[in-house]
Image (cartoon, rainbow, N blue to C red; front, top):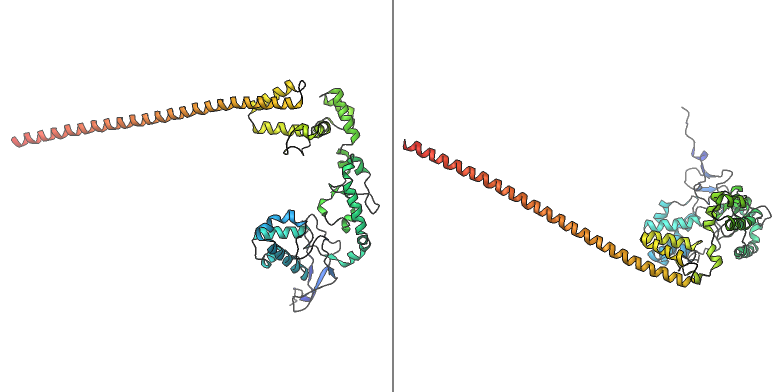
Length: 400
């Protein structure tokens, strides 16, 4: 009979990668391990080399870890955190298989919740489950040699992002450090092409998942400074006639003009933060006045918000901003006091209604008990009369 099962020597185990991870890099060509006969020892067909980020040091807690893992460090202690993290990383480096949650749990003696946080952080930042081939490292050796120069350029770029005012124009003409046209960018305006992304040529503090693709639809939907100027100019000319405003802009629809106008940080460009007096809660908002209106309408009573808006519309063009704010607050306090008195009277009236209802309920129960008592007395009297009649009948029978 032919043996349909393969021998142990012919078994090939494919390398496992986290394909669902946003920063995973599945290989384009399949690699395999050869299994020795009779033992469970794996021999790599190609040499593996671990490359940790520059910020990582074993036995220490880096500045990059503190914001993300501060809760874990305070819960289990700094020494316990470092020990658990290093055990997981060492076990992954010394083995040939990807690190799993079950195996990591057997290596540490902390709660599952804190272990999962350490595991997720280590996997996200490429400390585990991120083996790279040494051939690929040699291929990209020249790019790593100029890593210091790249970091300096990135620092200067990130420092200059505040001076870039037309993001759309910057995206249209963005170039990668290798000279190719950029296909990806980050929120801090770091640009890379597809080849550099695949080869991992970007700063160590940036993840692959942080890069966003530069698509034609994205660039088309963004607003340039010229389009914003035409939008404001159209609003100044036509007011709330948004069809005419969109025709004046020419490249945007009516809905896009409305939504973009609501998102424009208009007040930051005309008033200082000291004059706005919006407080820390609304200082970083793109449109503080809309945030304040939404806050008032969502928290205070609608009548109080209506009174504040009425006073603001009445006095906004006649007095200074401080006087208007003071009058708005005074009107709001007075209306809130009136509303409070009204609510107090309503609560008192409801309390009286509840008490009256309870009293009527008690009276109804008392009446029901009285009716029950009277009916019981009637039945009792009838039974007494029947008993007397029976006694008289018995006496008459005895006399006869």
